[in-house]
Image 1 (tube, rainbow, N blue to C red):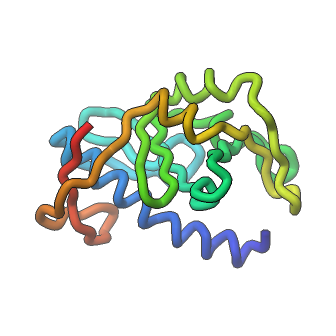
Image 2 (cartoon, rainbow, N blue to C red):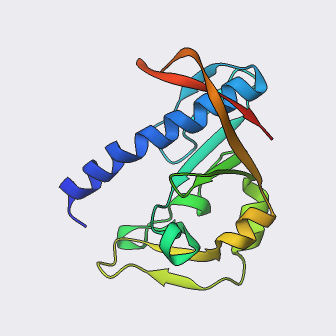
Length: 160
């Protein structure tokens, strides 16, 4: 993957981070305390819970989620170094909330895949396994607008 493609993918994935953050804020009656653009987590709410959001559109076809743990030059990334309390994994349609510790346990002894361009390695988890061990966040209807990291997006009411 080129750096240009990486930036394009990163920008595309921000909408899923915003949707996930929005759903958590409405469900838990919290606000975003801070965002984080490094390995630790994606955002922290004012109840001091941290979340990492990962989108995997290919999972709609493969029926597997790719959970990255190693990046270029064999540098630890993703699940191997996150400090988040929870992961929110989305196939770009459905969102699944799972404790990071639970996800790490699920990754143990799972198949590992290295991408063709050797840009990362990750665990392959079946969507069914992730769904069984997570809580799905449902979108019910739109509510008033909220502000997240200087971007405006619509809030959603969710049921867990």
